[in-house]
Length: 253
Length: 215
Ligand code: HEM
Ligand code: SF4
Ligand code: FES
Image (cartoon, rainbow over all chains, first blue to last red; front, side, top):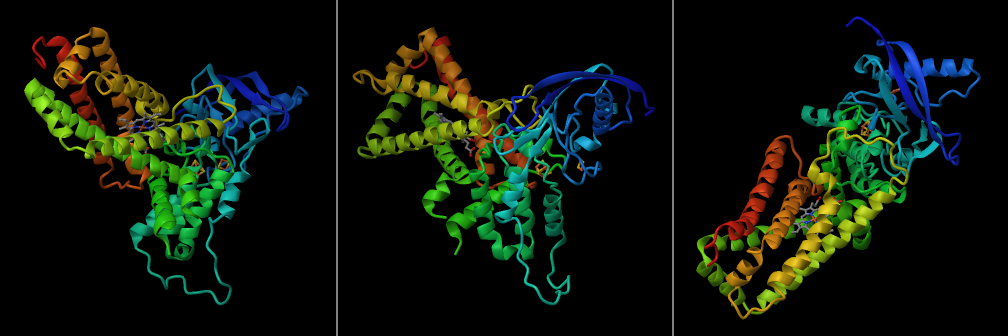
């Protein structure tokens, strides 16, 4: 597709700091290349704002190739924008039309604090990981990697779950601001593999407990998370988390 | 984790929601089968009602159990609704589905409350009423009034909406999800919800439109 130039009208949430009230500001950008990524469009805007002596829009990003999970904002009501299975940094302007109006908001949830503009503190997801999203490994001589055989299908499932980049779009998309897809991915990944088995019972219970404590909502099976997830993580992993939880809470030794 | 902590956790509440949902759904199926006796005439329907009441003490026992399940389901449903509202104190300026929600899933708490109101009217109509005349006449007298027939039809449409999501949702809550049968589960639960609702809706429709119905 040959690149063309388009104009985009932006309405962006601006907020000075976590306690400031914040409001929407409008900006217009003309002659943007459709080869540009969404974040590059924000770069263009920020350059313009800086030259005008105005405060640039703060937004998170790092790899810009869809693997680190740092970027993310809600574009016209959809986390990471309208393209399925795509992070904001990998979303390109060719998916938009000349003269489009875009409303850009930060991920919103009680458990996520807005630091500034579109930058959101998602460390609550790290706290959930700290509650059990790990395996404990004894020190000593490294074990031969292939001692424990793992069936291909299981390895694939675990890998699908491990694709989660921890961006928090599932929370942002969930009508209840629940983190169940994130939890499902993490619990699933470890529950499927033998290395995760010794701690699987405690893991399911304490990670769910932590999620509740941090003020995330309850899953009501709306399935918005899997539709918004840039890694297309399936709610099948939430079902596995539910099974892990039921087993751990009611049947574990 | 104690049992108390388990049922108060988010996943625990969802499990109770699913289990109470299953019980209510089973009740709805049995109620639907019983009510379909109306299609075989007032005699068959009255005979069925009599048979049911001849079960003696089992009847109030079952009613109390059902009431408890309803109360649990309603209490939990409203608790979850309130908790979920608090989980996003500042809403988005623009909300757009990414493609997961259905009309049923987005309205669960609201359809639930409508069902609750319907239940009160329903019980006043048919349960807490003068039982000196045959049950078929009680039903007929109510549902022949267009206003009541319409009320029942709309309330039952709301039930259909509720279970259109609920019948599938309860499987997911209990961890039943597998690519092998997901498509079957989804269309099967939707089909079952619609078929069951259709049986219920036919009753007010027939009473209103067919002169001899339940005579
Ligand atoms: C015949 C009556 C009813 C039936 C058959 C029924 C069935 C169900 C089922 C199967 C579910 C799915 C459970 C799950 O997601 O695991 C559900 C969810 C729900 N029900 Fe009902 N229900 C009935 C009445 C009510 C009433 C009276 C309320 C009153 C408020 C209510 C409120 C809810 C809510 C809010 C949910 C969603 C909970 C969540 O997913 O967070 N229901 N219902
Ligand atoms: S499950 Fe998907 S949306 Fe949620 S944090 Fe992981 S990658 Fe992001
Ligand atoms: S910046 Fe790394 S995923 Fe978008």
